[in-house]
Length: 391
Image (cartoon, rainbow, N blue to C red; front, side, top):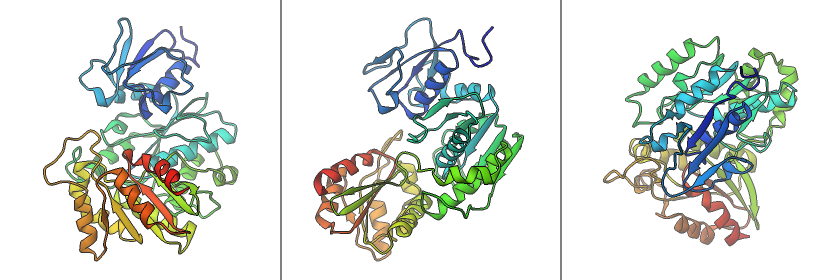
């Protein structure tokens, strides 16, 4: 019989797409819980650093005989257990805190895991972003399992949460949900199955290292969940105050006499919140934004809202759409966001490639400026290019 702390002992699990943020985390936890683990991906990613596992890096999927296969949603043509199905297995093995919602779920999950770790409660966690203070996107402690749940492909709605946290609900994945009402219904049914629910928590008014009203709301949700998990607010607050954020969420660095802020935000509400946080942190310094729209469906439906959010900056450059999993849609480009900004009386720069966007920022930047690089695609290349050019 498997030992209680190694519930996956005796299983051989092969992860197709192991280099992604999600599957790499599941692989780490599965290995810690006793499984023999290996996997394939097209390229070696930073998420694989420190994973001492059998790996195949090749142009096409590799599936050796004799393994159970767990498949990333990017490779649906491969037979095996879906990413969502395997995550539901993991969550069912432990008392869990599952954090879901359109915005802030990764940050809230990381806050909870960090406080549990720092307060000596030995958590496990699965978070879809690097969290420097946790050391990895997965941990395998013996306590609560903290999970960031994803609604983009309905994964979260199959997770049996002990404590469910809903940060907020906005329609963000237009190719998956027909309406906001459908999305609300899905969240309502999921939350009703949990033993406890955190929703509409009051913002935290205590000390935080991460700026912005959105992070005060994130901290309020985290503290409410921690209370349900047995951590009093007075005990949690000092640890929460030291939480420094997740990867590509308000990462700040200097390039000569210009400050660069790198952020993953891609929905209008996230962009507006991040710009507000920049203003809170850096005051009246001139703010230049390099924005890459993410997904054709989101750009088509939310171009006006994206323009409205970006209009709060002093200067905006917009690249073309990062397609991710979607095929091009005729007439849908980043120019829709440029047009939306123009309709508001702004004069944005249309810079279809990342390199053109960097060129614009470098030409325009002046001493003391803040440059916000924002988007969920390969715009994450821009900060390094800016450092090289501006530093």
